[in-house]
Image (cartoon, rainbow, N blue to C red; front, top):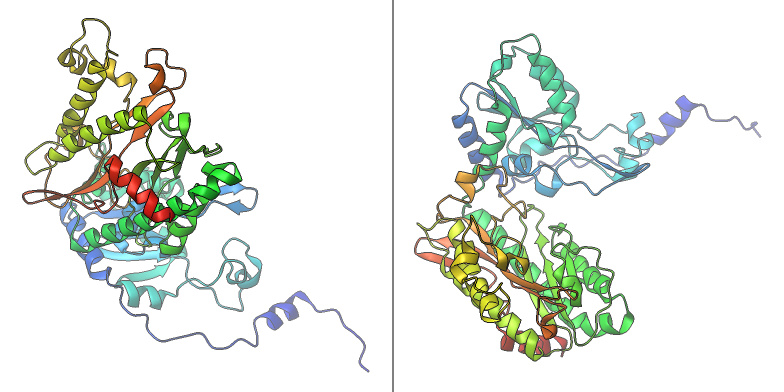
Length: 480
């Protein structure tokens, strides 16, 4: 018998690289979003003719030691490529006078060390990546290895006509800055102008994007119904906020890419903390539970819906009174969603109802009128009980188009194809001594996702009950 000989590193690499079935070589089918994304890139190039635009996807972010957070690409990159959740970390889209190239880390060969030894990118550890040919076939993009990016950016570079989305990837921004050092002065604000324009491009959704939003909202509706069905367990098992957070997360992950943002599952007084995402509390049968959650599609379009539910199935008298006030405020906000109105008109309409209600309850200081509290310069007393805005744009980001200037966002006109939220609320903290005792500890928000149409609006989430009576019937039906 031959004596045992330890394997050398070279022999191990040869052994681990051998004996694999051939890889699939059939061309990947073209994605249905590919032509849409190509149109977006052409529109962008038309706004910056003759320029080299650098749009990174961003890289992995460390959560702890050698563990990363779940990866999510920069929205502008996902919008212009169509890759969505399929994006590889560190990818970079470059538009060079309209010619698009995607630089990314393609599938490594099996005889490479990366194949088995790289815990962050290696196929053994995180699965296969697409090949250059697959990207080109599926998304209609010229593709190249990420290692080629520095040379491509430096070749025939005119630093004065080079822009980068700086927040997406600081390392790529530094690479661009090095090319600018010895060149002519860069136009002040050049990168910010690009970033702002990329936000503006997402203001008006096309039919495909609206379809993705409808699907995200439908999936979110199913997630809410799963929560309602699980409420008895959430109440009985303890730490109920975590229970329903997990139920929704399960459905979001199964029906899409996952949650579009950290779910707010706030029972009782926790509902009065606007961004309560700890979700550590109990749910008691006499609590209201405020659930603000949305499913994100693989395309990265996300819903953003809030419902406030009586955990035991029925609203108490004070709960119903507050709920009705918020519903009336939302109806006023919804009525303001129509072309020709300004974005801020939604908030103006909803908050007038809020101000009228808190005035009617005697909560404003003596002598203060509704008009006085609504005065933007010298008022604001009503904001003690509703501190947030009523609306924001929605799409691939839960707060979409956020890089716009104030005059284009708050003061901008509503136009068909915009999708936004309408979400007034009233919040009476348990220790608020200015609130009626029976109101303390009650928080209510109602939020829907709304499409601006040619003659008004469509409430895309209208299938989810909103009136107090309908919510009670919903709980009765879903829990049964």
